[in-house]
Length: 421
Image 1 (tube, rainbow, N blue to C red):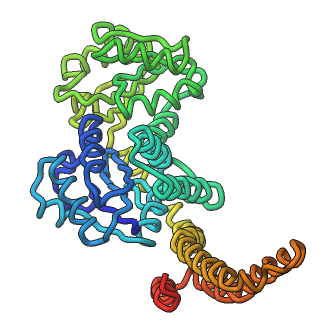
Image 2 (cartoon, rainbow, N blue to C red):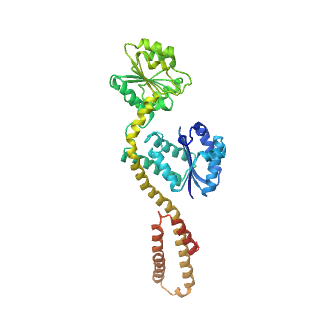
Image 3 (spheres, one colour):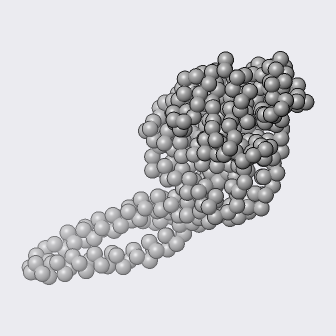
């Protein structure tokens, strides 16, 4: 059964709103339920991130299978079928493997060589397994992709330098500190996806880290996971915390400013003799623009982080060709794996057919062999087995030699026709 994939990525939408196509936990369960009920789909798995929604499946027939995958995606995201079809990229067979290998390697990521995608591919595989919708084919595909992603990062320079917004933010912030980070205190405002990623890096680098969030429960849960020594503060304590910290990172999804102009000016007055470094990753901005010129505040904005990431990425571009070469080698292995699945049933049927002929012929000669001793009958049995094995050995060898060839499907059809399998 062929592999097929439908991919919708933010980079393919030409300014469109990708949020419409992002799938949360409930939508993913609905998707898997619909796929399970679809007879054309035997296995499936979904990669769903902030920037891509990709459905991988083993289908009974390519064209009808793709149509069903598009229909189901459209139903789950509540979009028109034509819209999903026009925005999604379709992959088939070897192309499916090549695409997921590129995804796992980080060369399809918005930030070249990012490391987070590897964990997301693994999570997608585990989620599909938990829903009992993946099987040998999809599991093998995803496991191979994870291995390719790991090899790309260990054998090439695709992941040197900062490969994520959190890692770039931490490195840029450290470059603005007057002293080494292990002597500095950090306030992290926001514990969502970006904030959590920053916290993971910050706890081992800064003297102290204090988490601030609108949801103290979320902040407490993150602190407990990271380190019992990580402090948690409420929004009402923020100004007091900022008066004594060495640095602060704002990474909330708030629609309104966390530090408005009045708060910025009040902080500026207090910190005029001991400046604080503030990094604003908010979209929209968490810190009022007056901080750009406020005394006692050294403001780093998101644009600076993005420029830093772009500079770091340029170093990794030279590794893309190496990764693609590595992927090409692994694709040959994928072709052999897929071919073995096709060859196995045909060879099994061929040997079974030959064995039936052998037994039929022995039955015909049964009366003539009746007078033989048991030892002689065993010799005849062994001889007929050996004749079958010798006759089929070379055809089996030649079929296996065509494993990675584009001629294999036609060859197997010819074998089935010739031997009436």
